[in-house]
Image 1: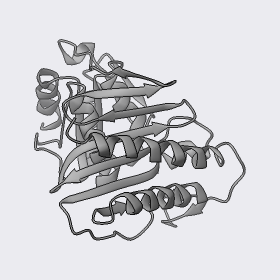
Image 2: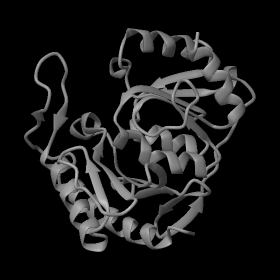
Image 3: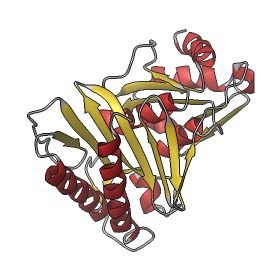
Length: 261
């Protein structure tokens, strides 16, 4: 693997950060609101400590790399590599005691997602991918991941995190149209839903209003497992916004046609 050295160090860093997160999970803690008003955007000490841990580990290993994360200001780098960190993707699930959250870490090369990880420490899982292959590291063993395509939307399982998290009413309506065409539509999961797509249990994930650190670390996992992930116009992702992830290209085309109406 071209990025093997990066991969080995990243997985070790994630294991360390996961232990920090578990120290706060299902414990009493102060929850702050980063966006007081109509929206609730929670953050906890776990978010900040996990990001600090990852930033420090990356800085020690590759001081020339840039780093962008959710909780702290970007660190500029002198190379073509930039790391993205979402320390607790799914903070609402985290503070609710639900294990469907994860630590996201991704590597961009000249702005393109090249390597990505999602660590769910409560379940002891690290999902990884490099765009050509994807894997699940669990209980000391590494297993390959592949999506499980279906022939039509009517056979597909669709996930999205929550209807209130779409960027606007128009996006909510487009998701509703797609949800009306699939076999099963469910809410919840945050980053975990994308990994279940890579593992073959879900065929579609549709969201909007995402930040780059919410989705770009997941792109190499989805693509490495045989899936497709773009915006709602079919363009490759280079940031956040609207996201459609599918088990294969044929199903992706069907879903894009519904979202474009």
